[in-house]
Image (cartoon, rainbow, N blue to C red; front, side, top):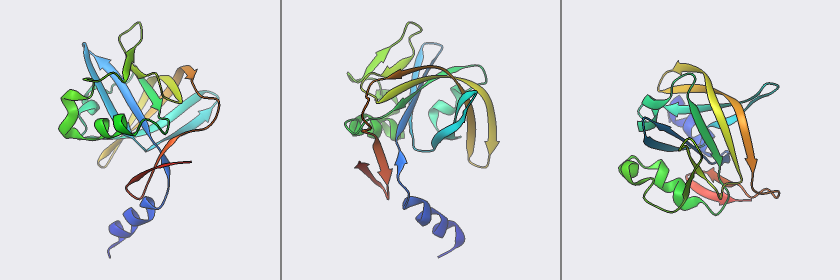
Length: 158
């Protein structure tokens, strides 16, 4: 097994929280499932997310643009699967999972939390872009932790 395969195998043994990043650009709604998202700083409040450059949402991610980071609850596996497949790209919003704010930004009302963010910086590295996101707003929907997790190719619950 080569170094890259060992690295992938090692990372598959970690459990990651599942999030969906969503936005609107020129009236077109976009969403992608991500497991590579983490807090960056508490002061200023910020997140870090990694997006594959081949993802359809990537071209809409620009410094200054707004995105919603939906922290999924354990009941949201279906929408996570929908937003993780490029085959379903056009039908990601053909369901009742989504709500929209005053700016027509899509968000998932049943998420544990919805974090409204502004893209502050984008760092390109290899196949991905690293987004540095400042926190604009936070909506908490669930006081008890009930995250959707992903480990070794499967969804998990706490």
